[in-house]
Structure formats: C-alpha cells, structure tokens
Image 1: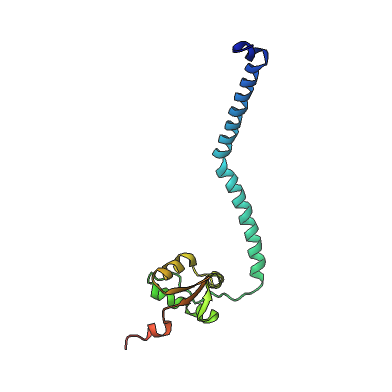
Image 2: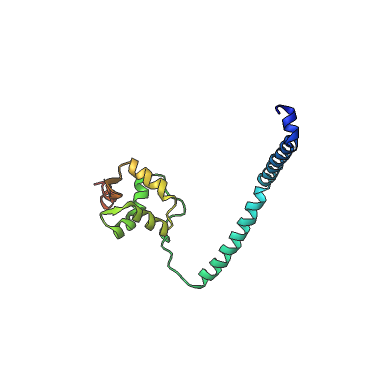
Length: 149
C-alpha cells in the first residue's frame, strides 16, 4: 500500500489537519502574548513599585548617612574634574586596588555610571592596569589642582 491510499488507511489526513491546527493555535497564543506584553510588564512594574515604596517608607524611618552629599547635581564632562570627584574614594582603598572594589565603593557612593567612567579613565590612562584586576590611579590628584605654579 503506497501513496494517498496509505495516507487514508492510517488516518494521515486527520493527523495532518490536527498537526496544522496545533501549530496554528500555538502561533495565535504566541502572537496574543506578544501583543499584550506591555500590559504584563506594566503589571509587574506596578507590583515592583509598590514593593519598593513600602521598603522606602521603612528605610526612611531610620536615619542614614548619605555618602553622596558632596556630589554635584550635574557631573562635569572633563575626565580630570571627574577624577577629582573620585579622590576621596581612592584615599579609602589605597594606591593599588582591585577594580571591583572601586566599582563597589562608587556604587555605594551613588556615583553615576561608573562602568562608563572607568572605561574612559582606562582609555585616558588615568587607571593603569597591573594584571589580575589590580589597578592604580595614574593621575596625581593633589598636584593637579596646584599645577598652575
């Protein structure tokens, strides 16, 4: 038995129609989910915002020190001026340090976009790599402010 007769005898037509319907219904469900993803994300965003607001209310009850009180509202665009803002952090971690430690301290101090800033520092040779994630600061910050003599 070969050809269309074999397909008919072994329910091939019904199986092919069922397979097509399963694939088509799966695509309909997928396209509906994709078209409604903005609502799903909005739902989770609102849940996260309410959770975050509840935590902020609890955190505001206990007074904390704000480490970013000395940061300007708008960061300068000059790398040397930004390096001056990082000088208190460098005094905390020493002359040679792990870049991960500097990231951690910058994040705790609420410095904006430290990854981009440190990449720019590396390109400008302000951060000098010593291998294995160890870096040193190449810009003499104290001398930079009084270098006009």
